[in-house]
Length: 157
Image (cartoon, rainbow, N blue to C red; front, side, top):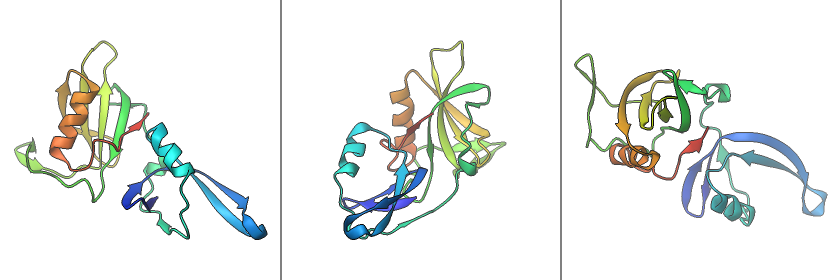
């Protein structure tokens, strides 16, 4: 779902919906969302949305996020959207053709490796291309170098 929070547009995965009785016995709907860190959870708990509107912007493969991509364990992922604009600082080629549209980025690690792959995936979570990194932070930095606004939007698997 997409909603505005403190002047920023957030996109989060819905993990539950509840009916709540609010003030004056008025029924409200509570939506539980996946949040990337404890600070955001705390900030959202103290937030008064005051008739905030939200929209469902896409289903992520019916919320079926794979455990492995290309045989590597999925550690963190980021579904790309409009706010993640390609920076044109890096180019990826597949069979000699420039490719710059991907569905998601995924940080993965093979069982026997100490290194981390940043996989560039299609809508079925198939790896289209990749980069190799010494740490998760390095992989996230590479993603942020290539696409705007990625550094704080990762979801742990």
